[in-house]
Image 1 (cartoon, rainbow, N blue to C red):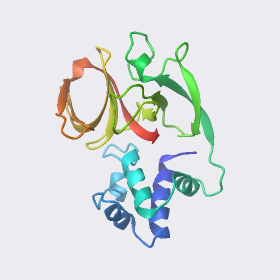
Image 2 (cartoon, one colour):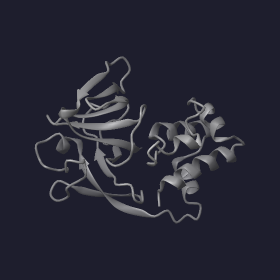
Image 3 (cartoon, rainbow, N blue to C red):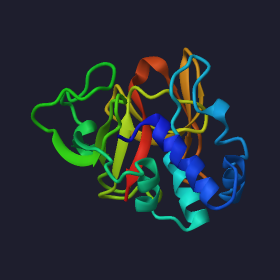
Image 4 (spheres, rainbow, N blue to C red):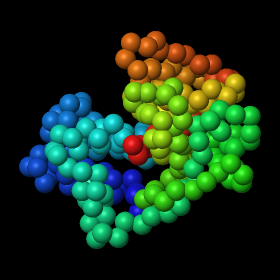
Length: 211
């Protein structure tokens, strides 16, 4: 099971394998030294916080480990459970169909497909296939993003936002208040954007990217 505890344990194990603490691994990867602190793994309300896809990609690059190496650390027995999760294309999400509940959960039915992916346990996730170049250069046509509408989000997390007007955005969260969601573009040089809460259909955290 790709559980919160096991993913964090894998990060600790990867650090130990290379003779480092979790803080040392974060520094080696060019991240803030506190990124993997125990205090960062749950929110003040006690909700699970997951490491970002970007941070995992950076520690893999810094250590020379592959994604398969990391998944073996997540499930050392080699019995990582997999499940079928709902898949939809970005084009459909931006359309007029009712593919999601008000909470951002898939409704299922026509328009939805499925893909095989490691089991996220109790975390509710769905897969979004990128279409076109609106999220380039970070996410390109054909990439698959694993999104959780239930995971807690904090400043610096990468999120997908769907507006009530049908716009679908991949952005970095800058600030969230009762009135607005402030988002930074993932494309260098682009302006930040503040979206009024009443114009947001749902927000989901990007848990993983399959590219």
